[in-house]
Length: 117
Image (cartoon, rainbow, N blue to C red; front, side, top):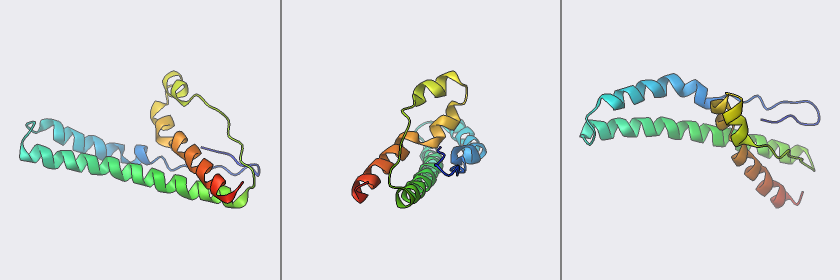
């Protein structure tokens, strides 16, 4: 995700990869249900809850990392990367998407602006 000037890396926990097995199991259950039935709706909610949990974990991690960077550094330089191209060309699309790079840069931007940095 990032490396700061002191060489510290953001030890990213890969939330999506952790939940992949559980998500696949719940999605298989969903595919076996009759579309439109009440059990299908319940299972759809279970799958959505897993996706929401992953998104919330990612957002929380990115908020904490961006807050730490803003508190410790006066200037932050970000390289302009083509994340879409990286995810398609280098065969690690899930990992690139799981990083939440765009969200991280927007968090950094508004936190740095608030601090006047």
